[in-house]
Image (cartoon, rainbow, N blue to C red; front, side):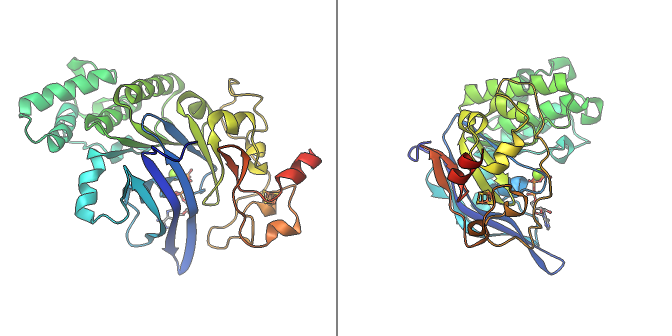
Length: 329
Ligand SMILES: Nc1ncnc2c1ncn2[C@@H]1O[C@H](COP(=O)(O)OP(=O)(O)OP(=O)(O)O)[C@@H](O)[C@H]1O
Ligand code: SF4
Ligand SMILES: [Mg+2]
């Protein structure tokens, strides 16, 4: 992956929560970058830190408790972790939008769907009249497959899939440069999921949006992602293009996850379980976070920080022992 022309650059991001007197190390020096028009998939088990990464970028970590304690996030060359909250509020929605897993987080139950979108449109185009904003909202809803005769209904009159499509329309109504999607299709049935993914792909192409797709679902990665960052215990342990990571996994964790999957076009959708549990983020092991579960662990793995190494140009892997695995294969 190129380092220049990157629209988003996340460098050494560290997020901690304070909970019951303990420090939860949720995100530990995460780095990745993204060009306009490309999608990166953040994949990993539950509790790996995926949502925390997205919320840190948007600066919406829960308060008190959640805190960015290190790192930089450059958006279009500007470190947005240094912007004041007022400036950040302008960025949210205008430049960055987020689609949450639960559509009702974003929808107002007592407002007609079209009015909610029109409001977003108007917030970002203050010169637009109410009538123009409504026309724009109807266009946006039609794009996500909601017919004009339904747009004046309330969210509760819509199915789960339709609600999620409204949320996607809302996230895209302000034409964001960066879209963060946190498991946007997990709650949907398979047919609707396929439609929504197709739509996301089309819209992304139309608007040249950069996108972070958080998912457990390898089918979603295959469908929409260009690059993949595998997240384990708050670290990106493998990072590369989708083809690098799927077809040539280098980290023992990724190999385990993808073990059951012969290739990118196979229909195995879920991450395969690996024996053991991820470490407690308030009590991480010394050295490699994966060492308690890793079949290749040596004493070297249990000492100091494990740096990312290149498995191939642009394809990195946080493992000090790639060669040993090759031998043991
Ligand atoms: N508000 C909070 N207070 C304390 N700990 C938290 C809080 N939110 C998240 N965590 C912890 O931070 C770690 C990362 O959580 P996060 O929600 O980012 O993971 P995730 O990868 O999105 O998981 P999932 O796939 O289940 O959504 C977990 O150990 C989680 O328990
Ligand atoms: S550093 Fe060691 S323990 Fe960690 S993944 Fe590599 S071989 Fe396994
Ligand atoms: Mg999450």
